Image (cartoon, rainbow, N blue to C red; front, side, top):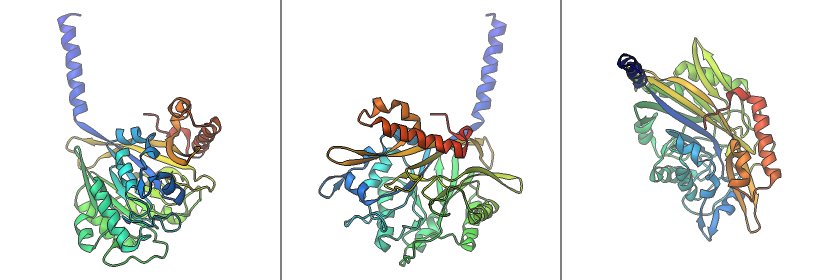
Length: 365
């Protein structure tokens, strides 16, 4: 190579490096509903009063940890003491939070229809436990002062400044005991909250909402109306929870603005047995921030099917959340898993691809 040509090549790479340096990328991943049914609690008990949920998430630890920020929906309470119960009043051991943190989740939203299952003590202890484990948390609050100070949740990661908002349609008729607060889908209050979020000038505003009808595979008119409302108020991304089944992942538009809306991520882990509740999706997105820009933009995005596997061992039952892209490796990763279970996992993924579109599946593993 001549010296002149070498200079040209080196100059090209220098320009390329400068261009790449002019933007930053933040990788996000969202999980569906994290449930705590009675059989799950029993399976996690390793000795009287001692619990370990870590094995449940061993197969999803890599995609969660590889993301810059992993966000989960904790659809249960952590009262800090027994009795621990499943449906209809979800009260799980604090050890679940320890395992979820170990798995790589960074942000936990807690506004859902089971937020009050342990009354005020559960709201408060759930918040304290999550904070102790090192999570960012939002959606429920110990009192108004804390909400005023910490809401919207502002997350600073690398060069990104993100605002998270979280709401639920209700709390199953269980009243919120003062002074605790559970964020409800009250559009008057939400408009105020979104205005506050905009005033803080984040690069991206993300709303995580508990809405819709259980077990319905498509979103309803009320969800679409709420999505338009939040888009109008400044939401840059909307992630839905609650139906316990996966609903469409769509790029919605409002006055020329395009917003990714995941209407329901389904279940991340649970013991539900109804059709289509044996798993969900993780939604992965990339945010792109150009140097000096006031707002980030959405880059690549897609979904990762996650199947809930119940392993019935000789001594006890165990629960696992497994990305379906590992299906062909399970005979090595988990030799005890029968082929019929692997076939069910593949069938779950195939059905999701048919409904959501195979082209939207995330392939960057």
